[in-house]
Image (tube, rainbow, N blue to C red; front, side):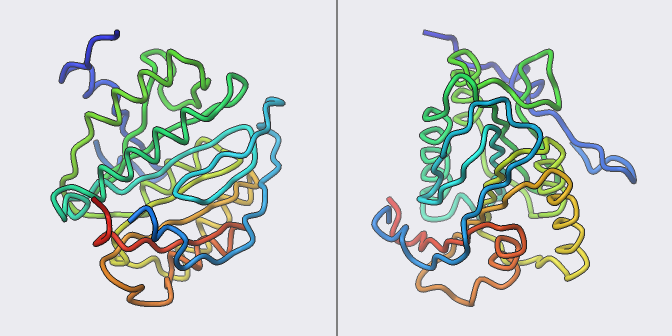
Amino acid sequence: MAAPLDLAELTKDLIGYKAESGSIGAAVGKIGEGVSGTGGKGNNGNQAGGSTTASFMGLQGTGSNFVYVLDRSASMEEFQGAPMRFAKSELLKSIASLGDRNQFQIVFYNESPGSLSNGTSAGRLLAANEMNKEKASRFVKAIKPSGGTEHIPGLKMGLSFAPDVLFFLTDAAEPSLTEAQLIEIQSRAERSLTTIHTIQFNRGPAPNDGSWIRELAQQNRGTYRYIDISGLE
């Protein structure tokens, strides 16, 4: 059994993102609620011949390369940490389902984003082999919610890997993305024909129509899902 990551290694593995303009900084039963979108495939030039259908939070995406962008702000610790526990569990199940010919990356973000490195390949997709799956498992389990929320840096980092499919999860409708920001994300996604699926966490019945979180999926051939976190354990 592999030893757990120590603090120094965890810090090393959370690789920060630099944008073009400079550094941005270092109840399961209710899953079926609020689904919309086409769930189309982003069939881009990055595919390595290992096309598969991956599922995350009940949403499905088809491709070879998958990136998971998850909100890790302090609010994900509400309800005794149930939202983050559920997100981690679903994330690890999705990664475990990938085949050896697939690639993946994980981005956690609050005010700033970070991705998983294998020590020598910072900023790159990782092969979905057993070694990288094990490292991803230890990395994910060590993440703790903290801080505020800035969606754009996380989305930009996720799209920088040019995946076939990007799964995006947040519990924060605010700060909302402006129309200009949505257009910018759509433009970036079009370069690699990335499909973006979105999941919104909140308590109780859906408080709105999904607003920009739904629109983000619809503009990028994806599917939106709302999940009531008050029903999670």
